[in-house]
Length: 353
Image 1 (tube, rainbow, N blue to C red):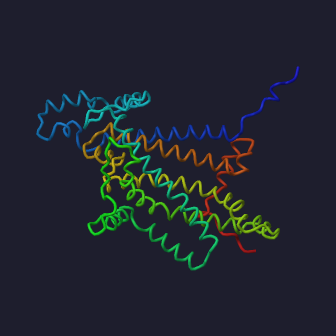
Image 2 (cartoon, helix red, strand yellow):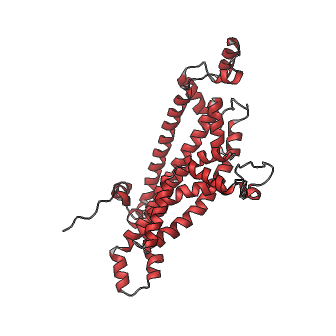
Image 3 (tube, rainbow, N blue to C red):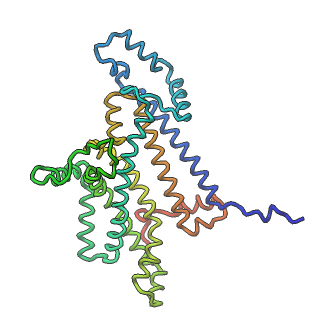
């Protein structure tokens, strides 16, 4: 009887590695949720007093604290909140008494639309600019382009947002609305004029980093041995760039995109407050002002899970785009080899012979 165990195909090593990374990401999310819960409970003001007002009698405040469960021990409150969260119940808002999940996911769609617009604008622009500057390295265009990118990177995001408002929304121009007052009865795609300034402000903040990373990765790939060999064989330059060099430059660009997305999440929260955009950033700002603890905890938890998901997808894309990691036979080899894949900005220059 043939040995069927030997003929059974083994799952790829990167799959078991990814399961381990998933567990590590969930552990990170749990630790952050614990820290955020303790931090929100340590806020100086009392949510019950904020809801009832500063002149409310003490008996009413104590009664509301018992109703909200704020008089229980901290560990008991956390375990109760964690159990409800695992069941999909994020509690009720202390400010509006509405379910937190309904408020949160209604706002989350607007934030995701904002981030999608930024990615759709930044990624093609960064690839085009990065490749162009790399092909014209040390030229006047390269120097002026890098200077402009450094200027945009050094400028705070809120100053870029204010500058765009002054440029396009003042009475002498009045081309775009300065405040994103959306009509909830209309589809978002019918109100795209309110997205232009927030998307443009976030794009100008995210473009420099990703462009410089693509440029550096392209320069490194253009100076590699296989590119020199391809040129000696007479392969056209455009084919070398678009079919060989760019594919190898995408690996560090994927990690750069993940870092850009993580930065964009924080920038989107700030941009939403500046432009009064009805996303989770304005919801978080209002919840902090009103000491709405369930809303704060839910928003931070969703942001944490989003960052963990971005990291997981970036690591998986890096492994799948790197043949040495994709074809590894053991998950331990992937972990060791990934430690050896240092970003371009941490690599030391080769020593002279």
